[in-house]
Image (cartoon, rainbow, N blue to C red; front, side, top):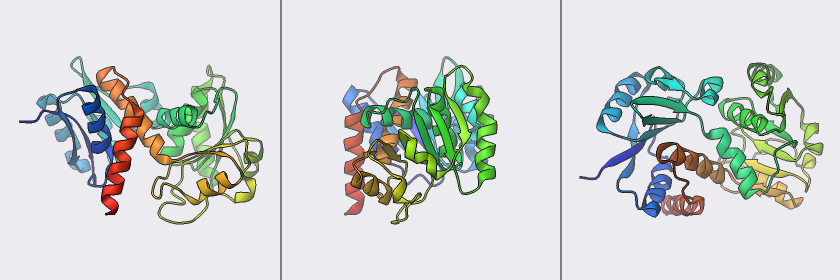
Length: 279
């Protein structure tokens, strides 16, 4: 019988790339066991977490629609997950169930490692004000970036800023409501909206893009979004959304096992799985 070490829970989860990504990391490290996908609705989340903990799993990835509802099943929250009121990673360790959020750190690591960005003291524009934007904005600010939130609804942008800005007091970063014109003086641009997913739509006008930018699009279907194509056309540095997914998964592996897996191995597995699905 194969040992189930970890799992992703959510509904639906059949489309998730997480099993391919995490199992590749397991194989590369010689870890015995597998990572599986488990369908779980909001009504079943508490019993599912308890059952998997009893089974002896090391941890869980959590996807929609469970990122908030899973919180009542946990013993404690890491400070970032608490600020965001959203959990995408659960660790079963030392008899406790702890919730984390690795989305923002995954984005920042992709910007730094794949995009070469220097976030400390930079100006970063984040498009959107939903859950992904919140996690990205918080992590950017904690790494010392001056973050501008640009959203179609300014009220939502203001709510994001008001709910998180106090957390950046000791970081050197800042958080404020911005406008598309801020992109002209920015070092980093992150699209944290769904605009461009399975379409050729642009979240901002291409005229605001410039070659000094590092542009990350959290969308990875398609991998080459219209935003990334337009950014590359003006010689900006681009980072696709798959790198953000890989880096947040890498953070989860560190939380579960205390070991830093090879991001390139995880990326290759994700690309191979996407290619398999296209056939």
